[in-house]
Length: 122
Image 1 (cartoon, rainbow, N blue to C red):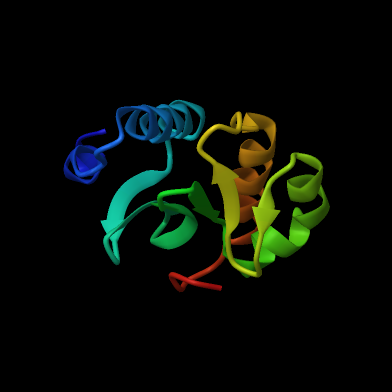
Image 2 (cartoon, helix red, strand yellow):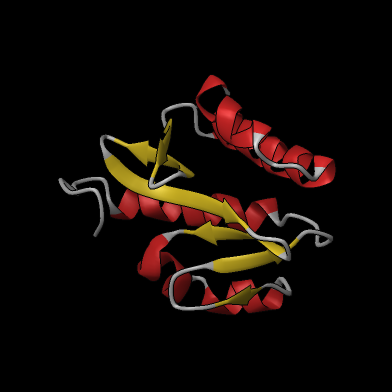
């Protein structure tokens, strides 16, 4: 969590900070092989130097970025979970519960799909 310490300290809203910190801890426990890092001022997780999943915050929501392929692959499940999405991000409103099953599927998909990826992005 040390990697994200400064980023988290900049989140003024205590409940928002707690929610994203909970997600980060969950990812680190569930996927200990992933490397936490800050790039482009955003927290993200990588595997063998390739992007797996990233996050950003806004006043209204937490944005989850599993890349275009991840959004496309899970579009129906994102909608079924009650989340909105664009081509590149899934939006979780701050008062929505976190669907950890969906998050786990997205992360696992990217780990497997990008296992032989030698670039940061697809």
